[in-house]
Every structure is written in structure tokens, then in C-alpha cells.
Length: 557
Picture 1 (cartoon, rainbow, N blue to C red):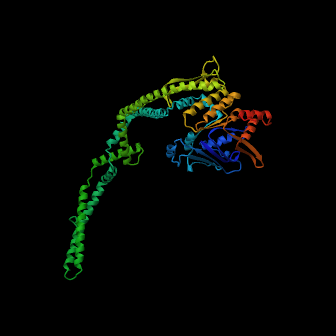
Picture 2: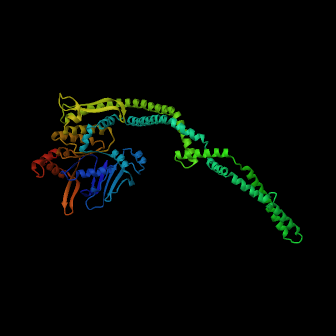
Picture 3: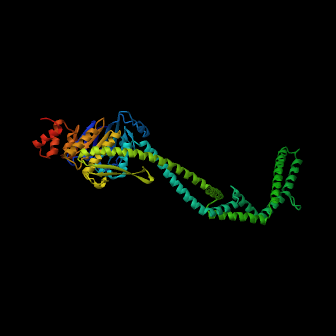
């Protein structure tokens, strides 16, 4: 229940603080006084988008805050999911707008995003404005009425979950089938590409190995000659001594003076180490020389492999052997996927069919619940509409079966209506007048309010197109809706409705040097007489209007 509302610097409202009560309340005031402004402010608290034009002229920011009594609404799970601090008694929602375009929202001082605000707002207030009468012509609203009265939320949620699974499976199946068709069309080409890459016998590091081997083979004679020359320089060639023989001769000379020169022993040892190293080098050079061979056939094999590798790299627009290996593995996996695609498609098909079967079973349960609720709606609407000046009313809920499941079930719902005896039933949007639409909507809201736990309902001129005793009957319905702890607020221009309000608020404007400002005040019993008298007679207050107001208010002179 909306307990209090605080507004500052919002359109024509500079500062507003007002408390609300349970039961049936009415808001009255001249056209343009600011009633819609107050509704707009409440709408912002429920997550509607903000506009900096809403900030009062000359101000930098505006604040709207409301306190709600949430006892008995069982919102703990919602608060926990939205990560909002809460208690079991009250909830405070605040919205702040800045002239720089920034908008902030808080629930119990916890910052929240607008979707969270909307979700919470749906649990607190239902604002029925005049344009919402157009909803009566929409199938979604008509289904909402049936589902509300059928109390089929668990079934509906189960259906919606299954419908999502079913539609996702349909999409995945279509994608898999399209991919299979494309893959099958490309299969021969993919196999050709894979065969080419497999013929290369690609291995990580092989490119570097083959490029080094090619370099050796291409310069084999030059390398072999250099190695043999180096070997001869170290070991000699028969005509001249090599480095080893000369070092050995030097060693003998040093040994010959070892008894005369003490340091020659150390020099001899060092020279011995050098001889060992040179002999080892000479042996390695000789082995390398023998290993290098001039092999045109092998050079041709290596060159052809590298040429094929480079050609494949250019063809596939890659820079190295590793990328070709990755491509080869990818092609192999794609071909394997094509080979296994039938099993994959069969799995998705089975998942789709299982979801469809469950969907149909749930839809049939939904249909039964809706058909039962439809009978209740038809019977109750006749009882509610007849006293509202439509004595010959006919109201029927037509439920047709769809050929394929829709997001909300297999049912196509249409409300049929006739206000006159002998007139055929037709879709309500085609035959009902504005006043009849208002009465039908109020009747439907009355039915729905009895089936929901929504604590606050606000009607914005639901009385459009009616007057006299019909307005009084509509007021009585709203008064009855306000029982059992519910709060009903009606914005009205009709004195018959205003007179039945348990609490009466007047919205008015004042003008001063700073501009025009909207205000709201709760009226005392005496002020209510004056306000309703003005609603009856206009600006000029007459005794007859005052007497009539007293009569409407059931106040004796």
C-alpha cells in the first residue's frame, strides 16, 4: 500500500508531501491542476523512463520518493534476488533526476536498475490510465484476465519454459540442417584440401629441419672442400706437416728443457691440453666431411617438399607450418563432424519432439484452466455490468485453438460483447462505446483484483463517458474493491464518484511571482462539501449545489 509520497522540483510541483490510507480514495481538481503530474511522478517510481524536461524550470535536480507498506506481500525472495536490503514492513523507493541527464533509482537506499524497479513496481501498484482501455482489444490482455482468474501461473511458467526449450531446439535443428547441407556440398573440396595437407606429412619443426638440409645439399661441394682443407691444416696432407705435428714438436722442445726451466712443465701441460682439443676438433671435422655428400636426388626431394609447403602456405594465406597443421586438424574435425552430423541432428530432433510433447500436454492443461475461468468471467461480467446501465448485456469469452503453439499457449482468445437485446455478439473493440469500454474495464479490474494480491490500484478517469447513477454504481464497485486492506485511488471529475471516497484529496494550482505551482491537500468533511459543490455547479458556488453535495455525501444539514 502506498503510504506517503514526496515530490520536489518535478514539473509544476516545487514541494509536495502527502500521506495516503487504505480503502477508497479520490483525487479531484480542475483540468490541468496537476493530477497527471502526480501520476507521472508515481510512474517514475515504477521504472518509467525519465526526461530532463520533467525537472522544474530553473532547478538542477528533482526527487520523488514513496513509502510502501509491504506487510503480507511475501516479497523477501524478490528482494533477495535483486540484492536489496529489506524488512517485512516497509519499502522506500526513490528516484532522482539531474539536469545533466543522469537518473538514479534506489530501493531502501540500495541503487537499482530500471528493470528491477519495474519488476518491484508490478508487485506494488497497478495504474490504469485512460489509454489502457485500448488494451481491452488486445488478445494478450484478454489472456491475462483469464490466466489471473484461473490462477494458472505455475502452468503458464512451465509452458513458457518449455516453449523456450522447444523454439531453441527448432532454431538449432534448422541451423544444424543448413550447416549439414552446406558441409555436404563442400565435403569433396574439404577432402581434397585435407588430402593435400596430409600428403605433406606435416610435423612441428619439420620446416626448419628441411630448410637447413636444403642449404647443406645446395652447397655440399663447397662445404666438403672447406672441411677437408681444415682437416689437412690440422693433420697434414703428406707433403707438409699439419698443426697437430707442429704442436707435438713444440711439446717435445719444452720437455727437453724441463730440468733447466721450471715453468716449462706448466707450459707443457697446457700445450698437451691444446693438442687433445685440436685432435678432437680434427676428428669431428673429418667426420663432418665424410657425412656431407653431394646428393642431387635427395636435394630434389627436399626442394620439392619445401616448394609444396610454400605453395600450401600461400594458398591458405598462412605464415608458417604450425598454421597449416592447425588448418589440417580443423579440416579433419569438420569432416568428422559431417560424418557424425546425422547423430547430432537426431539428438536435436529428439530434444525438440520431447519438448513439443510436453508443450502440448501443458497447453492442454492451460486450455482447461482457461475454459473454466472463461465461464467464471462470463457469469461475473453479467452480474457486474447489468447494474452499470447495461441490463441486456451479453458477454462471451471465445477460445479458439491455434494450429501451432504460441508463446502464451494454444489458445486464441477474444472477448465478444453486445449491449443491446437482439444484437449479435461481436469483438468488444468493434461495438462497445467509450463509456461501455470504461465499465467493462472496471468490471474486469474488479474481478482481477479479487484474484491477486496487488495492494494498490489507481484509476485515472475510469469514469470517462459515464455519469449519474452509473457513476455512483462504479464508485460503489471501487469502494468494494478497497475493502480487505486494499487501496484504491480514483482520479475523477464526477461528483458521484468523489462523494463515495473514504478519503478525498484535492489537486490545485497557485500563481505567484515565481510562476505556477501544483499542490495537493487532503480535504476535511467541510471542504469536501465545497469541492463536490464546485464539481456540480462549476466556479460559481450555489446553495443548490451545496445541498446536492451534502446529499451525495449523506451529510445532514
